[in-house]
Image (tube, rainbow, N blue to C red; front, side):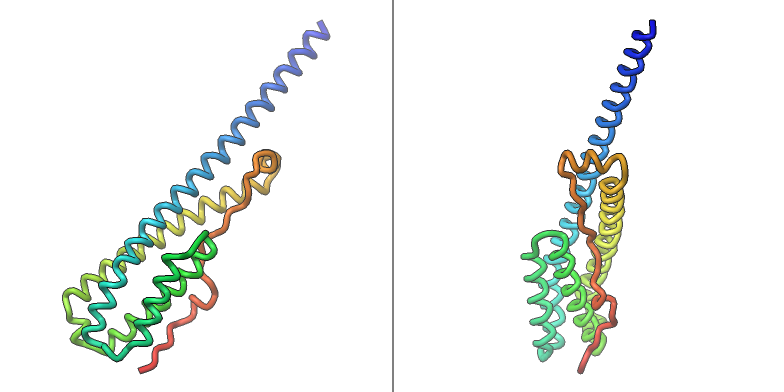
Length: 186
């Protein structure tokens, strides 16, 4: 009788450990997939933004042809963003592009006719909508990364993370210099 109880306790304990193992592994897979999905949503919005930048620059060039330095800065930043690999590099490139676009919009304020242009207003509004979607997608991505990273570092899930090679993910953030106001010279 005592052996049967011990056997039953061992079987129940093994089932509990197996269930925990299964749930923890599936939790990591689910979070990894949510992070990958969130990144793909960011990527879609970034591509929309990249496609919009040349149209925006052409519209501004029609009014401010002499602002070559700013146009070069925007073009270079866009090229860097298009070629960025990985979350960290993409974040740096996006910060450069955001800064360049801020400079472009700051210049546009010196040209009232440009601000009154319907095409420019439409492009500016579309870019604003894309920026909002990027911000929302970035927040969702970073929230999921937080959940994943916390899970990889807390017991007992850290054991499963180590066994199956689940590694911490990078956040998609902004650099300190991107927080500074844009300096525009006329």
